[in-house]
Image (cartoon, rainbow, N blue to C red; front, top):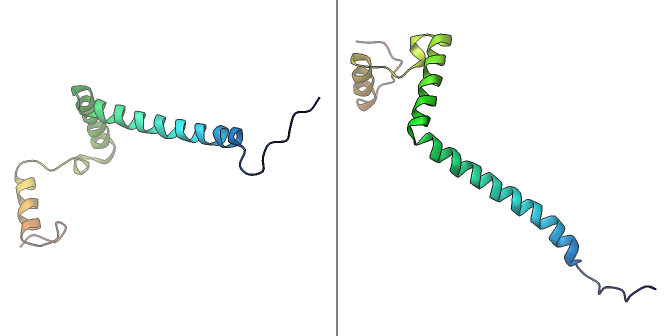
Length: 90
């Protein structure tokens, strides 16, 4: 025996079955982003960053790291004076 036909319009079950997976995916993405942000702000994140820096230095040489000492000061001075960091020294 067949029951009465549903009223015309949106089927609530269809809407529910389409919206819940999208909502769940958004919640999972936000949770992963928050977890990664938390991890990278801890000492573990610093260790990961150091490993990435050393790997980049091994692959592409010393230029892949942030300049230190005199080179860093010189770069800041050039940027503050409005000159390009890649322009030749005077």
